[in-house]
Image (cartoon, rainbow, N blue to C red; front, side, top):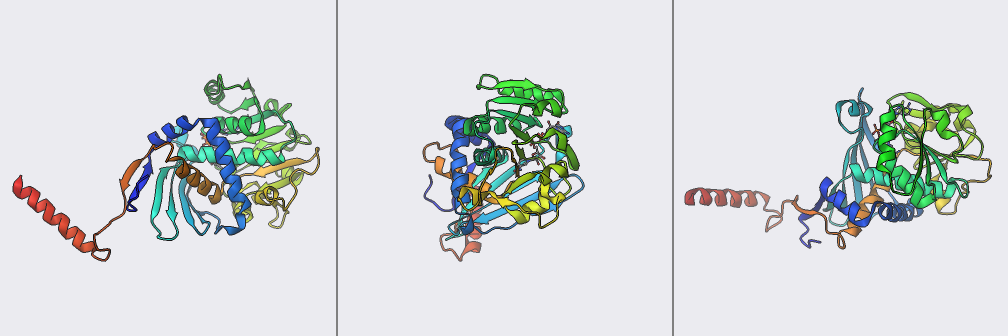
Length: 355
Ligand code: NAD
């Protein structure tokens, strides 16, 4: 990678796709999950703040910053459920990783694809410690942009290779099934959510609707199931009936953020929850009883993006899929920023005189 600090590696969407394909989607997810786990285990080191969200009628635009004292990362991300009707993505994102010592950015990257990967890697990492032993069947409700990534992560990390798909739009389920063809899944497309959860030890909900939706009602969730609730991630946007939460052991990323954005916004503010990092660090139990319902109330936290940025940066030596971006002004004398502009003006004048 470039040694010039003013030149910042930039990973475009095209480069990210090349990077993911060169590494392999499954390997990428497995390795990324180890980075997320590593960072969750050193949770207390990080600067943590609920994301900075700007809500509108149509959706939300958010900034998600964090730092471990050595590196600093942030992601810009939106969530606009109505976008797909207009041919746009519900979620798009880009992000930056910086050196805390100089404050200089070290990486600028697309994060729409990377968000889908990090969300799936985090969900599967949580399920690895919370789902019932030997779980191999997952209901996947909501078959949009995130869905295949979730499926592949759960197969690679948890071993769940039987999928039961459901979406209110049957074309979405058909597309998801087709995209996953030949990847070692046994796939059933279901006509209702109720049909999808039958026989599933893991239920992933990853629907998009800016409202209190009820994707799962209480009677749909039997004992011993692990729920990976991904789609409820905004104030006023949830997927599970409140009664399910009251029967579940609830695991969250960062409690202050999840109280605002997660399924638990439906509960009293002091309802007990366990932060996932505590389970990974051995400070709290995960699943305590085979009949327990465990719920990972995923909203997406800045440390997961930080881990993803860190992982991607570590890959660039072996997989140099990036462009060099002239992002930072670099005058010969650091305080002579205006002089740099004057020298450029002189250069342009000279070129015009020759021309
Ligand atoms: P998407 O719009 O591409 O797909 C959503 C799918 O849900 C669509 O196919 C839609 O038809 C389906 N759907 C909507 N209502 C449904 C219902 N009642 N029953 C069944 N299916 C239904 O969106 P996406 O990018 O896949 O994201 C899905 C959700 O996940 C969004 O709400 C997004 O904000 C959230 N998300 C969360 C995280 C996180 O870290 N927790 C990360 C990324 C995205």
